Image (cartoon, rainbow, N blue to C red; front, side):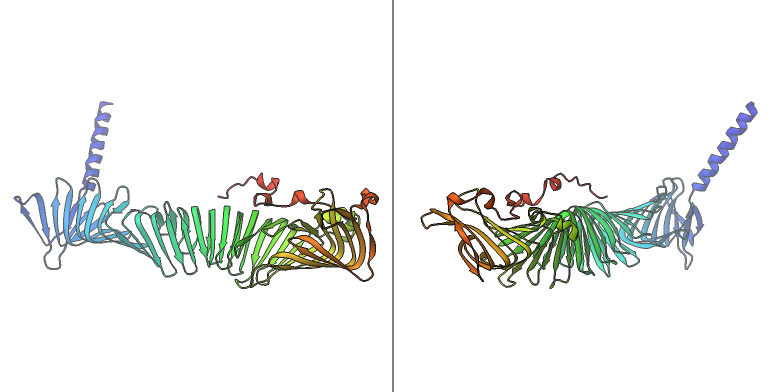
Length: 535
């Protein structure tokens, strides 16, 4: 048993000695060797002679130089003159000078340093190489050439195992199709993947990206960006808590706190999820979508569940779907959907499509309840289809067209429970300086209007049926009514007015639905919507 113990100790000792011998730097060749105990104590000075260069070897690495100071006891050397540190076919390090410690397997190269691997080439002034940890480090400005990418930074660490760089301070990537500037990023040389850990700016042919955290595939030009992420995509500035971008597909998407600023058409769209298809000139925003069109000194706000933008910059069309609400200084509106041609200035407010059998089952009030509605001052107008036309030059409302089940209501200015009412099948209205000037209602037109004398004394209720009715307004108040083609009606005095005759069939007052602020554009359901960021 004792013999076995001694034998085991002996074997282990031999193994340790052998491993130490394997770690010793070997001299493969040299032109000549001299000693200078005074200036270089303990060193073998190995020199080149003619074409015979100095070659040292250590654990798979061959080091060539013109001159080396080899310290056997310290297992280290200092090499000068066109130093080549060759680690098989995986790494070639060239420099003017190189210091190497065989115990720690660490090298320090300086002067015209080049580190070459199959997937990239590094240029710098000084480089630290740790063969044990398989990393290289520089802090004196470096340049990396990798396929079509040229990367520069003040300092960087290269992890040879995963083939990854960590760059810091003034990092740039130059590519024929884009430039990238960052304060800190990770770069994988094999996959061309880049991860950002600080403020980063990418400038492509027709896009630019700003973020503080994210990922970018430098070869395919696609990535995912977070933390103050902004993309300027051909004149459309996209903000979002997280943004995905793919240049080849001309596609970008954003989620949570999304804002698309169309600088060309002077409009902004916000929401919680958005997509842009550049080649198709289209964008879609959903979940609390809000479009803001800047019109002169005013803004038109359009809210709906989903908003789409299509068409070229000269012919943009906005469409909104489900629970549409509009707000402008001179008009408010509600509808199921909206169609806005920004080139022609035409806005269409439409109701949800219903089959004829269903519509026939509804009362007049129920029909008007589901119809689009707009408000001008004190005037409420509903109809099957509402069209608002703006003058493209002045950008002010120019005309109003309503088709099907027209119903116009106005609260009496003197008595709160009385409403002036007009109904018909078609309405054509005109504006002057943005205010409603007159409307012309045709086909089965009926007017119910409360009349007062100049001193405010009530005269009676005018209830008249006519082929068509023309109404003139001043400051959104009715000032004149004209009837055409055999009007049939009369003025009913106050003591003869019957309560149920004070409302025309289909009358419904929807004032509580009227949006008077941006806050009112969002329903209770909208405000309670729980938004989950997309990772």
